[in-house]
Structure formats: structure tokens, C-alpha cells
Length: 42
Figure 1 (cartoon, helix red, strand yellow):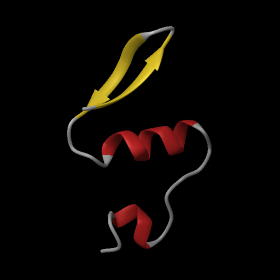
Figure 2 (cartoon, rainbow, N blue to C red):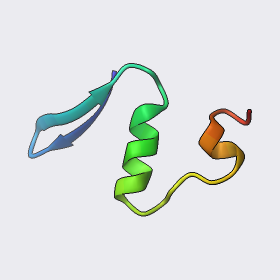
Figure 3 (cartoon, one colour):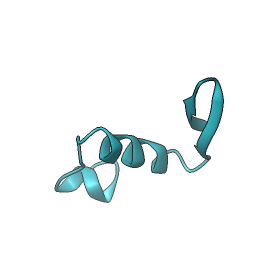
């Protein structure tokens, strides 16, 4: 399970292996582009 934590508490979690990376990059301003957006070099 991947998770985003704040003050030691899980605020978002995912088991799909891709969702958390996309959400984290969007939160930090490092958005996916092109083939990265489709996942694993589609």
C-alpha cells in the first residue's frame, strides 16, 4: 500500500501502484506528461 501521511496519520492511500504517484506529483506541481501520464511507458 502506498500512502500520503500528514503528522503521522494516513490522509490518502492506494493499492493500485500508480494513483499515489500521480496524486503526489499533482500536489507538488510535478505533473505527468505524455507517455508518463498513460502509465509505465504505454
